[in-house]
Length: 223
Ligand code: NAI
Image (cartoon, rainbow, N blue to C red; front, side, top):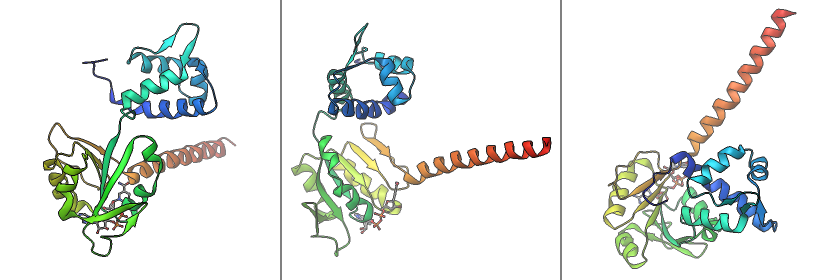
C-alpha cells in the first residue's frame, strides 16, 4: 500500500464500506462474500473487489471477507483507529450542531474546544465544551495537541482564521465556510458544502421530472 496513490474515488467510497461493515458487525455477521456485500450496498461485486484490491484485497477465495478484519483494516486506512483532537471555530448554529453530535467521538474525533468572537457566546458550555475567545486559540492548540479544526464562520473571516490555524500547527481543516482556502501543501482541507449537495439533488429531481414530462408529451403526440 505504501507509496501507491489511491484514487480519490476509492477513498471516497471507503467510509461507506466502513459503515456497512460496522452494521454487519453489530448484526453478528462474521463473514460476507463480495456478492452479498454488493447486494446490500448496491455496488457491483467487481467494483468492491477492485476497490479492496487497492489495499491488498483482504478477501479469500471461497471464503469471502472476514467482516471484523475488513472493518478494522478499513478503519486503519481511514485513520479512525487513532484519536484526532479537533476544535471548532465559530460556535453559532452549525458549530454547536457539530459539537452536539456525540457520534464523532466514537470515530476518534475528540472535540477539545470551541471558539467564537461573540462575547455573548464566550463562556457558554455546549455538551461539556466551553466556548472560548479566539485570543486563546494558538495557546489552546499547543496545549491540547490539536491537529484538526472545523471552520464554521462566515466566509469573510475564514481565510484570516485559516492562516492563524496553520501557523499554530493545524494540519487538517474541515471547511464549512463558502470559500476556497489557500493552505500550504502539508495541510489538508475537506470542504463540506451542504448547498452544493442540495443543488445536485435538485439537478437529479429536475432531470427526472423533465424526462417524465418528455415521455408524457411524446405519448400525447402519438395518441
Ligand atoms: P452563525 O451566524 O450561527 O454562526 C457563525 C459564528 O461564527 C457566530 O457565532 C460568529 O460570532 C462566529 N464568528 C464570526 N467571525 C468569527 C471569527 N473571526 N472567529 C471566530 N468566530 C467567528 O452561522 P451558522 O449558521 O452557524 O453558519 C456558519 C457559517 O457556515 C456561515 O458562513 C454559513 O454560510 C456556513 N454554512 C455552511 C454550510 C455548509 O454546508 N458548508 C451549511 C450552513 C452554514
